[in-house]
Image (cartoon, rainbow, N blue to C red; front, side):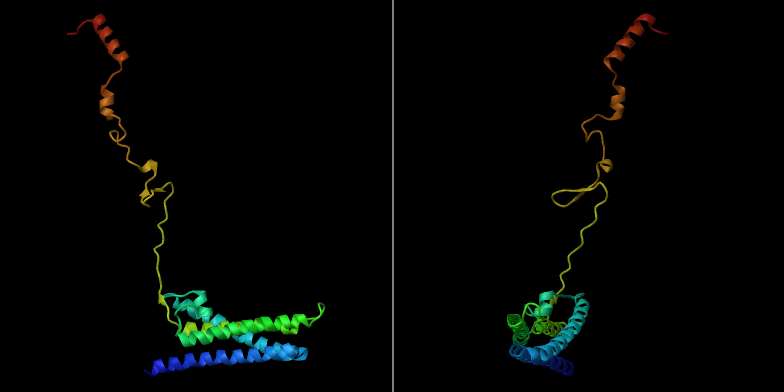
Length: 218
């Protein structure tokens, strides 16, 4: 019971971090859209910090998911976008909407920055485009730690064919022609003993003429 409650508290803490980070990104985006000076200071600092946290969470969750993938069927969309039933509906809504809001704010602030910046000037507000990495990293941490997945689907690896071996339509391997049985009856030919006993018409005539010339012996 204590272990389950600790896990729930840890999962709730990750969701709260996602919400707090989203609020900071939205606030920095609004300030950067209003003032170019604030865009050079607040937007750059908040975006760099959010991206750094997101990258760390991204890498950590990926390594954790690789370990769980030995027994669980995990996809990238489940891990970073919380697709499917990997999380309870309330948690899924908060994590997904936090990520979508970060992406929307980043795009709007970047466009506003381009609209008020000369072509030869640097658009400091565009730095916020890396901020949604925070949401993806936090989502990955929650899903990799507390997500529920289905059992891994194992498919048997196909048997390697030997050289010269073919496969029938039913998938049954067929031995090479050199290895197949070459029984004379199977090929419609008489056995070698019968063929050796048979003589050609020329040989029969030669034997009869020799008997007439030499006559019977004994």
